Image 1 (cartoon, rainbow, N blue to C red):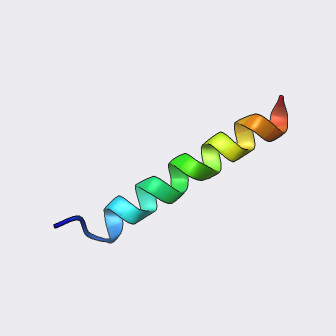
Image 2 (cartoon, rainbow, N blue to C red):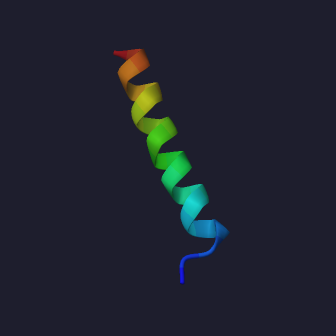
Amino acid sequence: GPGPDARIVHIDGAFDLFHAGNVE
């Protein structure tokens, strides 16, 4: 099943969306 890597990618994606929304 999905390991820690999957969680890191998910967190990174969520942070990216949050950062993008903050910048705009």
